[in-house]
Image (cartoon, rainbow, N blue to C red):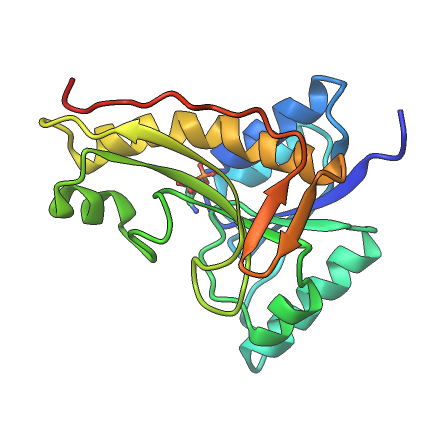
Length: 216
Ligand code: GRF
């Protein structure tokens, strides 16, 4: 196989999306590998997932860094030293400096648990329940300076059920996240994603013309 794209995955917690990427990499025909996992929390459960898979990890504390830009510069140095091509945010709960976003322009992606541009920021599931939407989902997108903004690579829609709580809805969306994130990375690694203005275009993307109805 041609050289695999090297990923740096940034986490702060549970790391189930990291696990989805680890599992994809283990499957063999996935054109990417995880070169480094960075956490800003020493107790992030995702670190154990990386260690179990033999992936190098790095814990960086904001303590000892005078400001956000210097923390992010340390992070960039670690990612560059690991030979990272593409940075994947996977539940990384720190705001990024404009310098970091610029340094990794078009090489930095995020997964967000809503159909962006709806329900940006924290508590996306609570926002969806509050708004009474019949569908929500997840979005993988390139990162831009604005939070939860940037060219969309892939989205998955899931129904919102009438008796959903934030927890039951999050669990349904999470299953979709675990499919979408490895898929988006695959398309980028295969060189099939081109950015055109505010849009990301995926070459030879399978068309899905189905529609869903909810309730229904
Ligand atoms: C996911 O819901 C992701 O969409 C959001 O943060 C959560 C991280 O979960 N950005 P995990 O740590 O990957 O399990």
